[in-house]
Image (tube, rainbow, N blue to C red; front, side, top):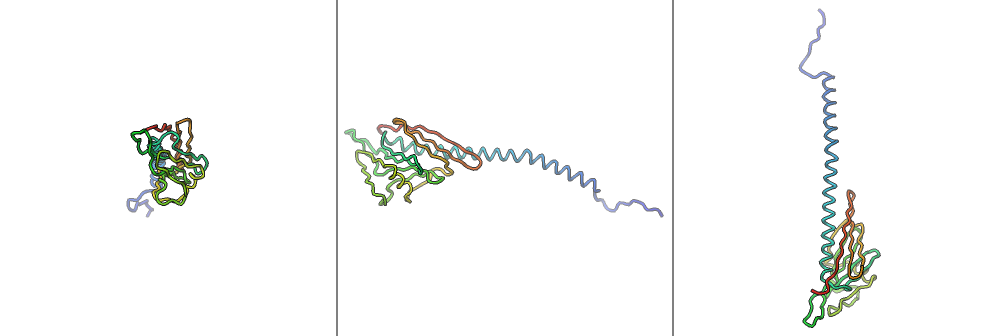
Amino acid sequence: MSPKCVRKGSGFTLVEVMVAGALTLLVLGLVYAFLVPTMRAQLKGTTRAQLQLEATNALETMARDLYRTAPGAWSLRSEPPVALGLMRQDTVLATGQRTWDPFVIVYAQLDDRLVRRQWPPEPPTLTVAVPGGSAPMRLGPDELRQVAREPAVGTRWLARDVETLAVSQEGDCLRLSLTLNRRIDRVTVHRAVWPRSGL
């Protein structure tokens, strides 16, 4: 009897398995080549939008407080920690005299956070008189540093991943610049604010 090639079962040949594997790898490679860059671009776009929104909201909060003050009713500290202290105008009396809130609002960059503090939130550990009368209080650079670093109730952070906060004065105008940096993207937002002279 002569041996015959008899197929047992309905399996695949080695060549068929290799061709199917190669086609599968080709399709997966094409999907990966198109999908991964698209996902990275989408993640970068989302991160940029979040950073832009966070920076804009933080500067808008600062601008709202600055609009309620008058030229010269703020203090600046340009060295780390960068800080801005201001007293908001409360009312203008019928005599034209201005009255001020009985507290100072301090914005400071602490590490990678932009924080807003109302000082004094409780009996302060720093001894600086807050007038609350007809003249706004101005903190010096060292007092601003102390207030910015003092642990306080009522501190809230406005932005995280802060790379730089810059505040400069040009006449009655304050120029604010905030840079946020996450590993994927970096955003800088600028704002110029002219405090009002009255309510």
